Length: 209
Image 1 (cartoon, rainbow, N blue to C red):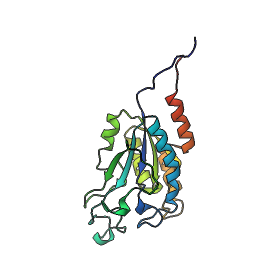
Image 2 (cartoon, helix red, strand yellow):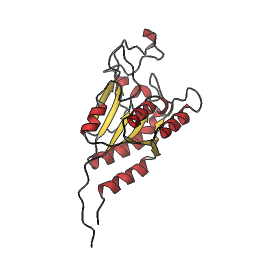
Image 3 (cartoon, rainbow, N blue to C red):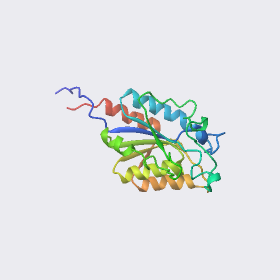
Image 4 (cartoon, rainbow, N blue to C red):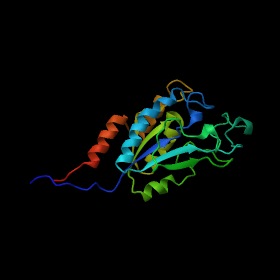
């Protein structure tokens, strides 16, 4: 019997771009070395997910000026990603589609969060969209990407980390590699953007016999 066309199943894949903001790129106040190299592979995935009607999310630090993490408040980091400032804007060249849902985190002075799930409604949005697998890329491997992936795994999602669309701070040499190992130990899978797009194409064009 000849294969019959099959309508795509309800969406189970979503793309999450973590904190790709100007202050985290070279020249920013809290720059990730070579952080700008994540933009091109993320753009390829953003275009593919939008083309196939898959949900897209983008998290961002969105701090008040007196945020607890800033040096002026006794925190460990320089001021960065102050809400509404140029440094808090998404990276120049990051091509977020109009359908992208923005997740703002650490929006109050007293709360900090590396994870895109921390103090946000990201989990509820993913559940409402029927998402079961989360594809993650962004900044930085050893901080916000790590904690976001660990939380996603704990919440029961399948997680695919885009190995060519993450970059590490590496305060201590090897921090990025250790973070990747922790994500994999938690159940996340590592893949590059090209492989991920091939999987997306296969899922969109699948047939039953």
